[in-house]
Length: 293
Length: 223
Image (cartoon, rainbow over all chains, first blue to last red; front, side, top):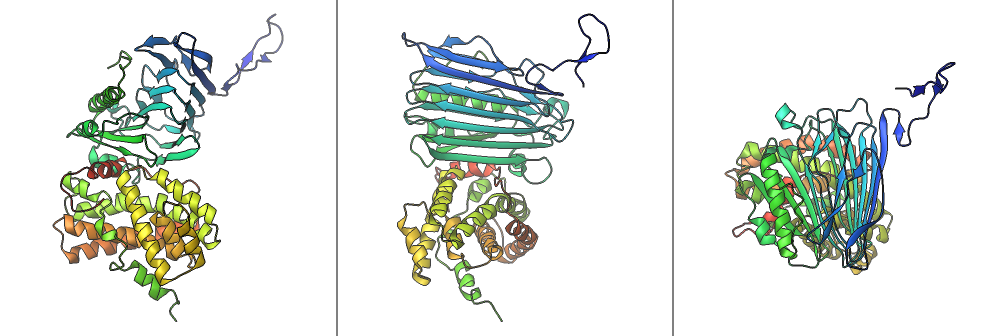
């Protein structure tokens, strides 16, 4: 699609018009940056913020003592070639919840380029951050690459969750995407504590474990960092015929992983909500409602 | 003429070699208890779809890096890889199993084949994961041979555990083992010849199985 226009006088040949910043051909290159800090009164606010389509921030609000920041995608989702850079920072003393109000859809790729999301979340000592997105739905033919870098300074607290759906199941799309690349690193200070690298393709064995548990399985993952009694026994009890759930410590004290495979979206939503509630009970802190569960 | 290293390689890979592998199922026990692996066909599928791909996508590529560092005597690189493996192994049981088996193996190899590089590595405060120790002990062998030894150990270990967990005779188990190894061999050779630059594998089911197995009330295996 070329960007052509007519000059103001309406005379002569059409003149090329530069596309808006961040638009490259049929793709968007957007970003979202937010820095949560604490003011003199002890309230968290966004000291710095910047965003460009396909993401924007709705007005943050306080809930249960934390600043709830909704990251909104006003477009239909991500398309091949779209690139989004997300940088979230929670400074010492601040408490922020980053969430998305709706599922993120990855649309069918028109070529070989994936949609790319590069996201980093940094929590300073004494800071508290929760990252709780709605599900990611890779649609038929989607190509997607997600690179996540989590960095928590010693003394910081992080609740990180993610939810990968098999597709638009109601439309008969179950693991019909083309390819997903999933890169995640978690560092405590400078120490690499968790590393995950996935290349998922419906053909071949990369989804064999998920399908063996549940043919239309939803994947939930989480990392919990903090100095509080982790509710491992309570999380163990979430395991039932509709959800395989496990949790355990990583190699550095005070850092935990949570994994779950769920039969369908209902069991995934129920399990994720229960996991979140259990972690908040253990902190102990009042859980921001998010108004979705 | 047989290669000089063949006798000791066979010894190190023999099931009688006391590395502690016999005490681990690497998550298989929980999958059997869940009814997800029930019989010979289930075991065959487990090896084909879960064990073998993980070897090709993660273990052998990481071994290749460790083997290159070990062959060059680059202890700092080995130490870094060893610590990185801690981060790869999210499930505590799998992480500890790899460390224990590696440490045990390193102690034995230092007795059987003393070498300054082994002593120097042992003196580091490294986790001593099995892959890194395997790379050290086989540092003088071609990577393809070392890769095959590691793959053989992993598949054999799973089949040995399965015999204790399933109604599965030794003859049937050996047939499954043979088929799996034959199917796996070309892939191991290919990855050893050209290791992928971005190792990684996705198997949350096995991670969950291991995370839960760590707290199971009744179990045969350590992992």
